[in-house]
Length: 277
Image 1 (cartoon, rainbow, N blue to C red):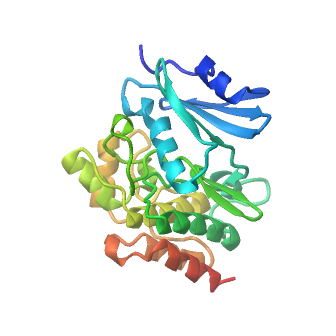
Image 2 (cartoon, one colour):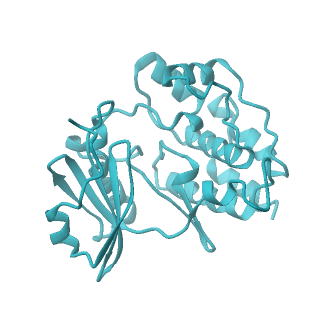
Image 3 (cartoon, rainbow, N blue to C red):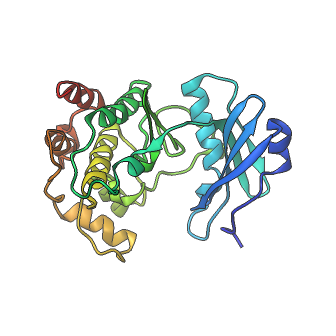
């Protein structure tokens, strides 16, 4: 039966990387991820497999690898097929996720004024991807890894903007709904699929900052609502009031405008934050 991870690293991947040590990072939604140390450096190894709900997860690692090769233009991104789907290996990205850095802790609670420097690092990573011609399609707090010198935007399996091998391509059926733009939700409800856009990415970043700073989803819906009901709420309701303390709240308000054409670009978001520093 599909969806029975976590899976061990296949022999083929061992022969390519020659691991010195391995550590299981996560297993969920059709993806087992390993942290692998090799003589050449540290790698994230992703094993895709189908789930009872989604078959496309089996192709996601190879699709992401094809995108990363176009963006990075390096020869240290590997991919292939294994018994349950596809696999990929890419250089490891250090950093702490936006979710981890902004969640409540011992010394602060919701809502809190976000770090403008960390927000700028996230916006810069997104702007760089957009400048390369790609929309991410799955912007969420866990996909920004922040370091003292900047941030990395990871998990590009759903990105659109260039050529992807037909064997590993699949329709885009949305992202984590907590960060989904209204037009994406509307398209999925109406057509069953959508096309990722840079404007939807900007909305997703604003929704990510909003939830990370306040603990609230951008639109109100019951915790046990199914995906269709969540998307109907996003389409039918306005987003919650942006009560993020500090000047970043005004930027988030602009990023989460209902009409996509009214939102700033990621580059304009960066410029607005720089003016606050």
